Amino acid sequence: MNIFRLAGDMTHLASVLVLLLKIHTIKSCAGVSLKTQELYAIVFATRYLDIFTSFVSLYNTSMKLVFLGSSFSIVWYMRYHKAVHRTYDREQDTFRHWFLVLPCLLLALLIHEKFTFLEVLWTFSLYLEAVAILPQLVLLQRTRNIDNLTGQYIFLLGGYRGLYILNWIYRYFTEPHFVHWISMFLSLSTFLGIYTQHIMDRRVCSNTALCRLLLLLLPKLEEQQKAPVTSLISKFSMLGNPTDSIWFPTQYPPGCYQFYSDGVTLWIIRVDARVFGGRGIEKFVTFGQNYVVKWGQSHFSTLHSGEEVDLYIDQSSGGGFESKDSYGSGLFEMRIKVPGGNTGGIVTAFYLTSKGGGHDEIDFEFLGNNNGKPVTLQTNLFLNGEGNREERFLLWFNPTKHYHTYGLLWNPYQIVFYVDNIPIRVYKNENGVSYPSRPMQVEASLWNGDDWATDGGRTKVNWSYSPFIAHFRDFALSGCNIDGRSNNVGACESSNYWWNVGKYQRLSGNEQKLYEHVRSKYMNYDYCTDRSKYQTPPRECY
Image (tube, rainbow, N blue to C red; front, top):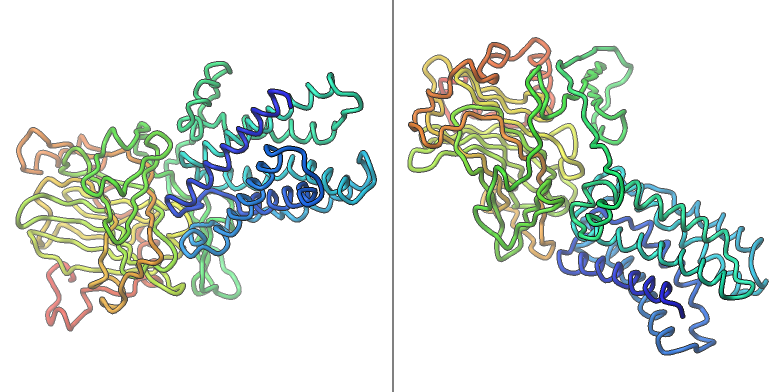
């Protein structure tokens, strides 16, 4: 055995251990392709059939047992473990991996060293292993879901393939009749694919010490820039039959959302969360620049060097974070993917809140559900300590499947709740209504609300499905920072702040149409019409 093969085996073993560590410790396979893991299980099952007929060495047999056991264990976890399988993104992992199996088998039947059953299967396993990583690469390209452990796993897997290429080159020059040109070519192609398409992506490199070292040796890659979009465009066209459900993130071209309602289609050009209505592009910031953990430190994790954070909740605790500063006005946005599966009783919240008694608060709250029922988005306002201003929506997409942008505009004229830059709720500062008057911080949390959140508190959290995980991205803040000044938010009413100028004092014509459409189709509770709560509706309802 040469040093390249030994190093390759150890790197391969390390990649498997990293993946098992991710799955076993945090009970999550997010970002991992089941299709790739099934291909690896086939690879090792067909390669190591000789474990029953021949003995080479204790090392050889041990490695065979480890790779057989680990590959089938990973597949079992992802398919059948009650907590892990819920984190598998089957909607994105759609690569038709069985189409790789037949060509590799035909190739092995045509090109092999000996035409025997074991030899053909062994050759087949070489060809299949060289392309087994493809579903994983496609999944990462689609979701960009690359946490620390997934990044380490992909990097080590690529290192293993690279070392085995060196092993084959070494054996070609030192062993007679050793030629595996096809498997070498396929391995080289996938090796380059891993390191150019993903490992050189800074989302992965930021998590991988070896990759950061590699970046020093290679030319810097240009950061992908998002072109600003300065307007919201809608086009109306007539269709035949209305469609009831909308799951557009993977069905339509990037940036285009399609609504079906009463035969009318609204095509909406999605505006980047940091560029809306002509406002400037916010500088990219990491979590630690604007936020700190408030509670549940052990149930918080940072990914991609602060580009993304996860909050976990189990029976022991949940978690939450808050902005370092307080604000008196602004537009506050975050991209969120809420926990999926049987999450009845679990609340994911993104909100503004003041400190002390008689507090002000502006809330987004996602109320978990069970048995495939949709998650409810509840919005609420607390003004001078008084709440009970709930409005609830069943959204036009599944918020557990993909990231979506949720925004809160707060200025002297109005409060607007945005979902993917579409206004769903407006609270106007007029007619003498109560209005936020205290500095507020931006917060997010994941907590147990099973005394009220689902079915009026009748559905309790089923902790056997924990941990439940909420994902957060985009931590730039556009707000008037009033720390160190008076607690009077009037200091933040100046027209020098772009979120206070004319176009943000009221909805535009297009926004008003979208606002009315969403509320007519997707709102299922409005406190203003709840006569059991208010015999006479509050002043803001008129």
